[in-house]
Image (cartoon, rainbow over all chains, first blue to last red; front, side, top):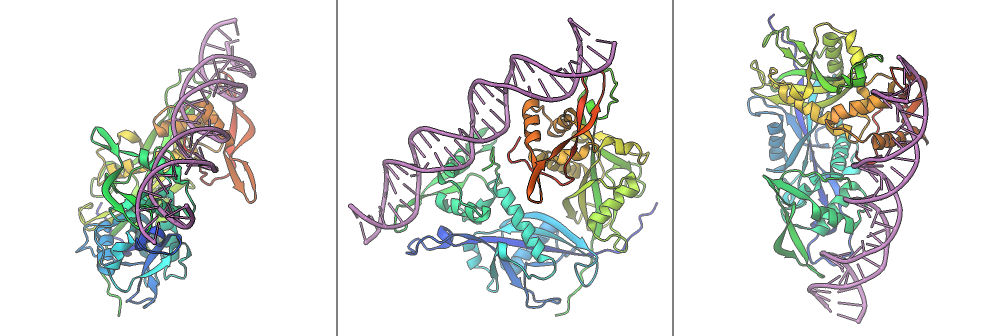
Length: 244
Length: 244
DNA sequence: GGAATAGTGTCTCTCAGACACTATGAC
DNA sequence: GTCATAGTGTCTGAGAGACACTATTCC
């Protein structure tokens, strides 16, 4: 039997890009203000094309089968072209589809979510818009739902993995890490328990186990007691033995 | 700016269908043999079309944009047409893509995984092939990887949700439920702890909480002590407060 | 010294793991 | 009674939650 070809749908990719601002995460070390809370933001880009030109939307675009090796490569290209970002954490979220979600034709979009430390955004594209991730609504297409799903995934994985470390630069303090977790989870964590669990977390490198968090010689200096800066032992996601 | 149309990829859906056989799950109540372990099986269908005609593969097919409302509907149609199944648990797994995964063209397939009690398979299509899910290999395309990913998802969700209940008929005993969890997780669980956690599990129905497992008047009779049969309070997935 | 943040020590209480125990029905 | 499965009671040990405490820096 010869394979019969069916009409093909529109195929696109969309990226929910998250970052964290506020608190100790982005403030200069010498800031004087009392601690304000860090918050998760979603990065939007004004649409250039029809439909909805000008409306802030999550970055996305057509799959280019002559150019993209696979969907992940297409998502990375979108981040590069629309946000000026390279080498950020990127993971597939969900594929949304349907006869009516795009006014033009039956369409299918594979959504990815990405995490970026805020400092990397500052040198990137100029037309980026930040919105609090839990209050993003009124976006075109089904982007409201995609953002909500991405945030849910981020929250879920934050409870048992080191995923939120990807929202910080390579060197960070434990206070910053705690703030990022609190921003993502939407609640305070117990400082002592948090440090205990983080400090006990190990990662296998071949046969031997090494601590996931490695002390560096650097410290972050501000108006008060300096904080030790840590780096990750691996870029991989690491799971906690138990929940938070 | 007028939207420029790019060439579209092949779009298909594939379904990893799991079931559990053996042990108390499928044996007749009066069987005399000593308990053999239950095991997770993946359901395969011999391919009818090129490429790889005749080879057992996970059921799949072209997306039909004139017929399918969305990808989930396409997956449900595939289960109906190729396996004779309706109304089984079905959830999106991952979208696989690339220029080379299908010899014909740049292709994209959204994989779903589905769970079915074995008794529903007996009245279904005749050409179905069962394979132990953890030893399925040599399948066409990238189906080996898709099955492995589906099994990993099933295992992962089994540790914190009631997902494996979908591998049992509407009425089941706690022993059967334990066997299904053991088959999925690939290890024994502690009977006492398992029953304690299952028994304590509650589900919110509006404002009030009711037990997830509801006793029925029926009991499952065999050669030995009869077992109380339970039913689920809800078809929804329920999460445990903690891990197993 | 005070203010503010960084970081630690330790108690408690919950709950999963362990396992011995009882219960029921066919024979 | 025995056999086999169904189902329970209870101890314990690990570890998250709670919170008081100490440490370091700038002023």
